[in-house]
Length: 133
Image 1 (cartoon, rainbow, N blue to C red):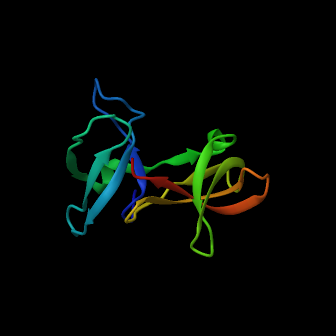
Image 2: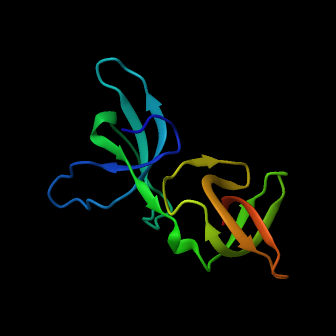
């Protein structure tokens, strides 16, 4: 069950006709002793307007994400010194992890720890950053 904003989750039990692999990001958690709920938004639909749905928190489960698909891709990372670097992913620190997303001013910050190679072949380590389009 999700416990903080920005976690990626899915429904542990889906209704007939629903995609059991559909992922959602938790936008808000509504603390309530009797019926804790979450506001969620579907990921990867490609629509410009994606509705926010309020669901029971107990209907969701946190999703473990496979980050190995990032190897070889060009990405931007946030480094420990608060600078950003773009390059090709050389390795991921954890292949499977519980993905956390945080909305920033210029994009989305993640907890995915990567090592990239810049255009000169120098290694840089940081967390994956997704720029706003």
